[in-house]
Image: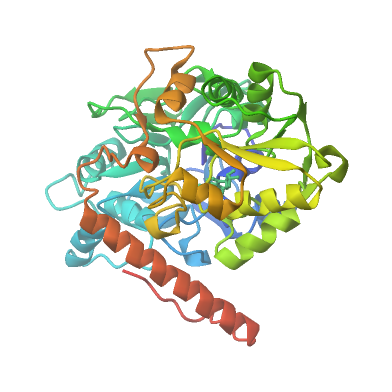
Amino acid sequence: MFGIYAPGTDVARVAFFALYALQHRGQESAGIATSDGVSAAIHKDMGLVAQVFTEDDLSKLEGHLAVGQTRYSTTGSSHLRNAQPYLIETMHGPLGVGHNGNLTNAPQLRNQLLERGVGLTSSTDSEVITQMLAAPAPGTGNGLPDWEARIGNFMAEAEGAYSLVVLTRDAVFGVRDPHGFRPLCIGRLEDGGYVVASESCALGTVGASFVREVEPGEIIRLDKEGMHSVPGPVAPEPALCVFEYVYFARPDSVFEGQTIHRVRQRLGEVLAAEAPADADLVVGVPDSATPAAIGYAIASGIPYTEGLIKNRYIGRTFIMPGQQERRKSVRQKLNAIDLEFKDKNVLLVDDSIVRGTTSQQIIQMARDAGARKVYFASAAPPVRYPNVYGIDMPAASELIANSRSVDEIQELIGADKLIYQDLHGLIRSVRHDNSSISDFDTSCFSGEYVTGDVTDDYLDALEAKRNDAAKQRLRARQRKDSGDTGETTNVIAL
Ligand code: AMP
């Protein structure tokens, strides 16, 4: 997610390069909306950033304000109508919204909008946010173009995870929910102007210097006056999603003063101290587990080697919708160098085990390559619970660790020994350099959800929705195989 206010700059091009740097955060669709203070333009489509935008598309995106987003679906389905940003016309000019996260009270907010006569065209909570900003409830400043107040009113109603970029006629806003589940930072451009980005790795790419992170609960306004902060409600328990550290963020990004790469390396070091393995070699599962594998190797003294090679041109396995595609793509993505494995006892290190698809296949690959014993380490604790704050892993039944012991998982994935980080080790690794940094959302490991609305009923409904989405995807695939694209059918799963 990215936002920019920079008169005299080709903001669409800057947004394009920033989204390119943030591609890892979403691979289904990409979009940029711009405004010149009078009118607005948007271009979005399914696919990777480089596939979505041509020179011609960028040249049509005029203006000095822009917001952009790369999306992957968590609750809404993978379809163009759900692509972001949303851009609509309001009484007070254009309104563009990019959202990273997941509102846990989206169904209630959705119903409130529908009851007020506001129509919705997609199944996403992001459209709900857009309409809540465009059409605030009566008595909450409906007639005023006071976007800060509207955003504040939205924040008072919303539960769950949301980092937002908002484009209006003359300002760009960056917003972080009171818990700060998802990251957002501010950068300053050399030639004047400001940007907000999900991760600091995008700042260097566009020649911006890091100013600071948007605080949990804070609204940042970027306009002709520069940068302005509106402190908002802050939750008693700040809760940056710890999975950002484990897997999601790019290793060169910095959160709360900590470089992700360093944290991941420490995860490996801590694991080596707590769970030694009698291996000849440590092999990381590229790319996200490489730092943890290096950390394990350094701390244990076991040599590290790159025994698995990744095809850099294939997308993130997990983000591919559909288990069948996921299974195929592990093989397409990774290949073993036989010589490295032959007759060795190997410790494979991955950042996490979610469904177990990857680990099972990689272990088999290592055996096929001639390994004698294959040990497997997860730098994160067992993922036992759904993530409801914006990471795509909501259905408990899909998680290999949900109702299994470590021994059972070990057997299922076919490892000679399975090692998991414990939660304490994870927290210690993240907090190491700065013990005063905030608490984390660890719900997918601990089952403790900091927003009270995540009840068993909520989780059951989410599981049902996911199963429905999987069926829809299957039907769409069958239609595609039979030559019917079904593009004219817009099913909105409520
Ligand atoms: P799985 O095969 O389902 O166990 O997935 C585990 C692999 O997916 C690990 O190698 C991780 O690097 C990666 N992964 C973990 N969580 C996610 C996520 N939420 N989105 C995308 N990839 C993930």
